[in-house]
Image (cartoon, rainbow, N blue to C red; front, top):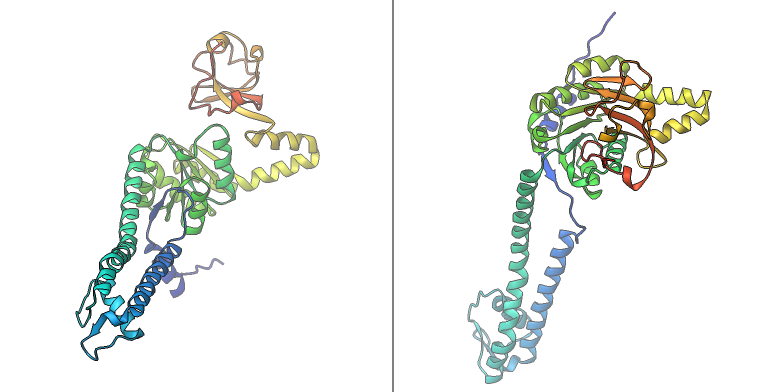
Length: 368
């Protein structure tokens, strides 16, 4: 017997709150002092100026006249300092002696200017920072082309980014999309641009400039979310390479139908690696080494160079695993390969070296 469970009021309210979340773009920035600490420092400086001015007036109180009682006490000194530094100037307390007026000209007036600079400067800095951030954001959107969008910055997303960056992709060419602001903050701290929001919504993906992306990595926590993200991303970008991860193998065909070019079943892949490690620990170690880009043995896809045209896969200096011809992936020993062609691509196993730290789809290898 099947039961259908409808969402309760709490679930409906929670979904409504999620829809109201403000989507924002966060760019990586240098570590700066916290805004609250900056404001606190300026407030303390302003208070010190106020106290200093009040004591200057109090020490020279005989040179001032109070219209109410004729004398100036400590409270009157603080009152005069407050209205003077704030440029209010009621005129009920005035300097009458030459020394007091000289002090107002050469001491109190510069303090007043400094006081205003501190208070107004805080507001100007906030406005300037907002303008600068908006300018950086617009410039980033204009310059962003052929980048990589990573949906989900969990364990899978982090590992995918590390692998891609190990091949030479710059961090400036990676945009992370995640519904958690804390996760996006962690991504920006690592040097990646981030977008806070639900990636199943087209407006969120547009903020990540997914329509101009070269490749999209979907590493969400739920398979149904991955399907919706793939559908939305494919609708916005017909030519991007979409690689997605699913937990259940039965959902892989649905994700391919949704527009994903490559689907990785994370649970099954981990299970196969566990099984292989049980049967042959050494083989498991080698396979794990292969999938860890940038250390030990690496598996690399690269184009065929002119010197290799007309040779067989086994005649190439590198260890060829497969040959990509058109949309087909052929094993190194398949007779259909024949001789290598200039339009072919080779999947090879190489030892890590500075010459292999290049993204294969970005820069061609030097020709022999």
